[in-house]
Structure formats: C-alpha cells, structure tokens
Picture 1: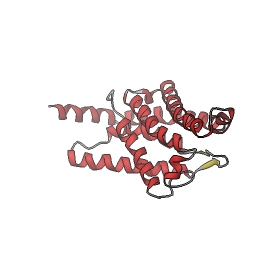
Picture 2 (picture 1 turned 180 degrees about the vertical axis):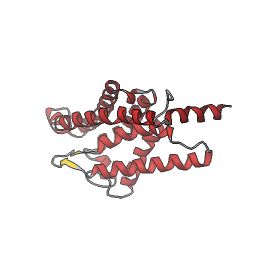
Picture 3 (picture 1 turned 30 degrees about the vertical axis):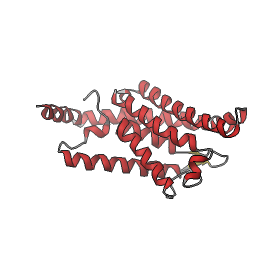
Picture 4 (picture 1 turned 135 degrees about the vertical axis):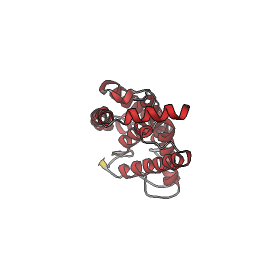
Length: 206
C-alpha cells in the first residue's frame, strides 16, 4: 500500500475532473457527518456538552487526510455560522463566541494533525492509532480550555466543565478508532485496493 495514502486516497479517481468532484464530495460529506454526530449527546448538561462530535472530527481527519479533513471541519463551521442547526449548542456566531468556540477552532487543527499522521501511516497500527487520536484530542483541549480561560479566567472550574467530563467518552472513542482504522486497512489490503492505488500512482508519474 502507498506509504503516504489515506483511505480516501485509495478510492480517488485518476481523472482530474472526477478527482475534483470526489474531493468536494468528501469534504461536504465529512462536514455533514460532523454535524450529525454533534446532535448525539451523551451528557447534554453544562456549557460544553459531551457529544459524538470529536470522534467524527478525528475520524474525518484520519480517513480524508490533513487537507480534506480540515476543510471538512471548516465547511461544518461555515454551515453553523450560516444558521444551519449543526452545532451541539447555540447557533450562528454565538457558538464561536461562547464556551464552545475554542473547541470548534480546535477541531480544524485536530483534523489536520490527525490527517497528517494518517498520511504517515499512523492509522494502520493499533498503537500509533491510539497515539494519533490522543494527540488529536490534546489539540482540541488546548484550544478549548484556553478559550474557556479567556471567558472565565484561570480557575479549577475550567477543568471541571471543559475537561474532566469528556475523559471517559474520549477513552471509549479512542478505543473504537483503534479497532476500526487498522481493521479497515487490513480489509482494504485483502481487497487489493492498495496495489491498485500503487499502480495508479505509477501510471500518473509516467
């Protein structure tokens, strides 16, 4: 299989116009998936609810790659700012200016980081998948907690509302990703898609 390929790269058409439409479809599809998962709330209380959103963001990055993954998140944020009901709380600019704003911005960076690591093959083994997803979560928290500190000041409440409630869910999401991504690569390898992608790249270079 290609060393620098994501799952989405293996299915990308060779023809330039079709490849462009393919990329757009993935970006739009990824943004819609994030919006859908944002509505799945496990702990809907508090200023920052626990949802399936972060899992969708990190998986979108891992599956689509750094560029398409981060663009999918930007498209998701644009949809929310336009008034579509895709955010977990609030709507429009209120979501960015409120307690969830830092997390939303962090989603873009996290999708890029996770996608970049996936392009380096980190999503093909359980250990590196866990590490990639953990780093993605750390990026989200870095942005999210920093913004909460800007809104409320530096205090213990920030960790109680913006970090601790998410840890059990994040551990479950990381475990699920570690089970799905390497298994998916094994299935693709058995289907011979890796060899097909390698052949397409070779033909394109000639």
